[in-house]
Length: 446
Image (cartoon, rainbow, N blue to C red; front, top):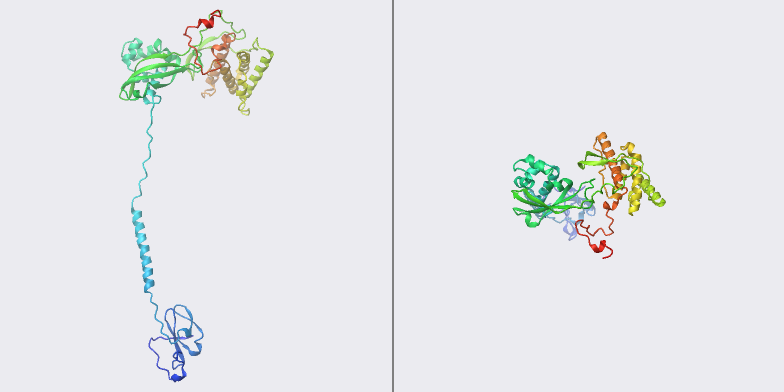
C-alpha cells in the first residue's frame, strides 16, 4: 500500500545524479519513492518507483488509476464551485416551486357553478289557474264544501242556484240537486284549459272544463265528453268562479224503450235497484241474481263453438303461465254484432259457475268482466284490487257480477249498437242526436 504524504511540502532533492534520471521521468525521493496524486480529488501518495505501473485505489474518493499517470505532476484539488452552484440553483428552484404550490393551495377553491334552475313553462292547459278550476269542477260534483267556498264567488253562485247569498249550507244543498249542476254530479271533471295565453295573467277570464262518464255508469256514451265554459275572477292568486254554461253537452245513451218494447231474458231474474259504494262512488245500480245462461237462441253451431272456445281462452288467460297475448287474441276474434250476442251469454254463464267463490276466482272473474266491457260497450266497475277487508271485497265483487246479469236481463233482446260504436271510421264525429234527419236518407221515395 502506498504511503500517503501527510505534508504538502516538496521533498528534498534526490542524491542521484541527474544524468541517471530520464529527462521527463518522475522525481524519485531519497527513500526510493515517487510522489503521485489522485487525478480526481488530488490526494497525494508516495509509492515505490517499481510500483509506478501498478493500479492504485484512492482512499478518499475510491478512484482507481495508474500511479505513473500522475507521478511527478501536481494535480489541482477539484473545484466544486460550479457543482455547488448548480446544486444550489436546483434546490432554489425546487424551494420556489414548493412555495408557489403552497400559496396556490391556500387560495379558496373556486365556487361550483350555481345549479341551473328550470323555470316552469306554463300553457293554458297546465297553468295553476287551470288546476284550480278543475278542482272547483270536481268539488261541484262531490260537494266538497271547502273547495266550493274558496274557489267560488259565493254571491254569484247563490244567484245562479236561486238561494239566499251567504248561506253555505243552502248553497251546497242546491248544488246537490239543481239542474245547473247536474252534469258535474253525473260525470267526472278530469281536465281543463284556459281560453288563451292572455288569460294566464289577466284579472279575469274564461276556461273550459272537460267532463267524462264515470266508470260503470251507462247514462252516457262511453266515448262522449261534455264541455263547460267557466267564467272567473282573480283575488290575488286565488280563482273565484262566477258563472258557467254548457258549451258542449255529452251524448246520452238512447232512452230506455217503453214497456213492451223489449223482451226480458227469461233465464235471468228481474233486477232490483240498490245503492252501493265502491271506488267509483256512491250510486244506485240494478242487480239480478246470477243463473245459468244458455247459448243465444239465434246462434249457429259454428257461433256456439266459437263462443265456448273464446270463453275458455279468456278464463285460461287468468293463469300467470298463459301466453300474454291469449286474452287479446281471444277477444279480438269476436268482431260482428251477432258474434258478440253469441259470446256474451256464455261469458255470463262462466261468471255464474265462478260466483260461488268470488275470492278464489277473482282473477278469472276480472278477465271475464274486461271481456264483457269490450263485447257490449257497457262497463261495470269490477274491484280487482282488494280493500284489505275480505268481507267487503267479497260483497262488492258479487254485486258487480249481479249488475252484469241485470244488464243482460234488459238488453239480451235489444240492440247492442246503442252501446257499441260500430262505425268503420272512428275518426268521423258522432252524429248529433238533436240534428234534424235528412228526409232523403229516411224516405226511399225522395
